[in-house]
Image (cartoon, rainbow, N blue to C red; front, top):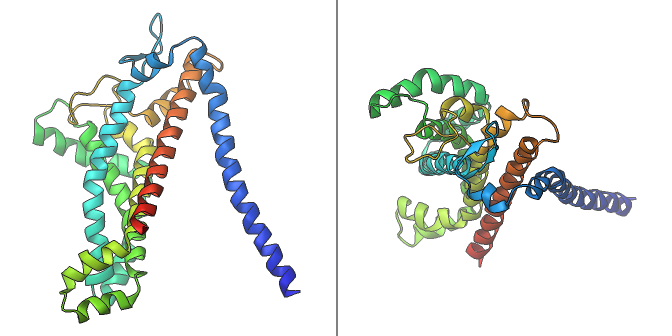
Length: 288
């Protein structure tokens, strides 16, 4: 009876693994079915490298380069802000803070992760936007840097939670051996604990970047939503996710505009797949 139960559990786990792969394939097929239809009438290079996104023009223009750059500016800005802060918070919670403070801080970080993105958007519009406007003397505070700061705030709780779990899961013998050899606490942290937890840290960073890339509502509210070629991070931008959310409800099903939005989704799928693939390669290389 025990062997039978174990066999059932093994088969269930196997089926769940195959189901995850099947779901990813089906999502790709769903996006490709309508997204690739666009390239029957529009050249793929015009879509990827075109500098004008104007579906209502005559003829319509479907160049996603300004949307891609908008997503890139916001993602890079949020990553630059969130990774150092998230790492510092995770190290403090996992290795420096006393036990009572660690429990309080970890619970607080997990509560921050539960704040809806629409609330972050409202806070950014009413408080962060005016600060950015007055600080940089801009005509509007709704820029890529505003969205980057807000998205960094949204990504930090996820990064901190996973990084802290990775740091605390490092075997205690590693730390004790390092201290026994004469290393200080800080030397042990950055020369022993962080390298040992690097796979979990990389996974946390990738999940944070995925949260930033996939965010829609906050970037619609905070980045200015301007589908023009951005020149600096202080300019209003429009991301690919915000474009899909803003225009999908107004487009005609089966039109070029409809297929172009699915093509944007296909590009986003490819970017996410590439990021996860590179992260997996980096993690395996680090283990070797």
